Length: 617
Image (spheres, rainbow, N blue to C red):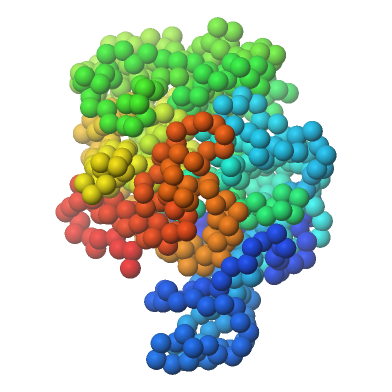
């Protein structure tokens, strides 16, 4: 019952507009902008690919065996129209043929809620949205006002002042279309009802610049919400698609999501929210950290740099022992063993990058993570049980292998992470954007857990030459496909997932039951439904986005052209996803890949269930 309630709650929450610290937006239920390009209307009828212009005449001759007879134009919430509360604040204007019920959508009507950020064009950092590079260690910010428009009946009268915005991301900062972080300085604010209306100062706008379907983040976060159980300690961001405007200039179709941070209502750890005002100087705090190739860049940021540390994988993880198949690990990055702290460290200097050399807290979590890895390595590789004492030393124990792993790892959380990563096949999982947490506070569970599923834009078969099963028709041209059918977890460069996957009790008693729960609660069917809704009803929004960002996803088939001056040989996308003008084909390919992947894992993990295979129909 808890699981069902959680899923229904997720469906009902994301598109509510609740509880801002101040009124935001303007009164415009049918907002458009003179910067928006004109695009053709399209059919919302899933049985038809026909499209025609938004002509207010009563009929048109595209009905096949009849002439369409249209009624009056209607404007309503997409969520109301399709009975799905997730789309409550997307606004559709359409009319219907009284004979065949063919729907014509007015593509001049803005569909998505709009995030509008207004700032002084003479600000020294006014070019913040175009100047950042992936190699930059600083992210200049500008201060301005934020307002929301085209959000149905929740449009408000004025904007929120004193809001900062800056470019976010690592590699993705090199794209023309960049992601942003929003920070409300005066007070906490809720945006579009996310996370049950909870208020926070920081939010993010994800660009999905390398995803021709602009849906992979939504698919990954939808899957995470369905796989993570109601009583899990794992946090997953809420989200909603939006249009972004900078100084009233259209900037693209984005995903509004929550900032990944340790806060009450986000990543759950026993740590004071205002650590600077209430510092805890002992090591008895909660820790959140990221497996992060980019940890090497943090020292150059000085006081703005996050603490980092590294551990040694020793003899437990060698390519000679475990087959590593990752385009990143095999392209010179190797096995990443550096970590970046994402939670507050309170006992380090405030004027310099903090390492284990000058912080007892960083030194402690480094030692604990090293011990945890050694315990897992002994269990998975040598079938030997080891434990950890209060000094973070690995010691002998009379406990079984299973008991020691259960004592030191939150296996329910790790099973959820295992499934999420096994389904979406993330190239980055052994490289970056892989989060863990450990609660060493007095009331903490003292277990390592997977946390915060994130970074889905290269997933779901988007990246070429990853876990490659070459497409024989095009492999000679370098277009190897990201196949849906390798058992990735045997070969991932993520040492934690690979070693856990070698423990039979973990797979049989944790992963498979959670897989069955996700199948039975309709998680993957919900992903298909969400994708099809995006592809049908947001087509005009896709057209606007790609009219502005025509080269971001390499629309000219030159896969090395879509970085903005970084000199990076991107060559990253599979051929079906390169040309933005062929987004319909990309959408079909994405759904096809997802369906094949889920059905492949079903046969591997639950063949005895004889469930109806997942279908895109």
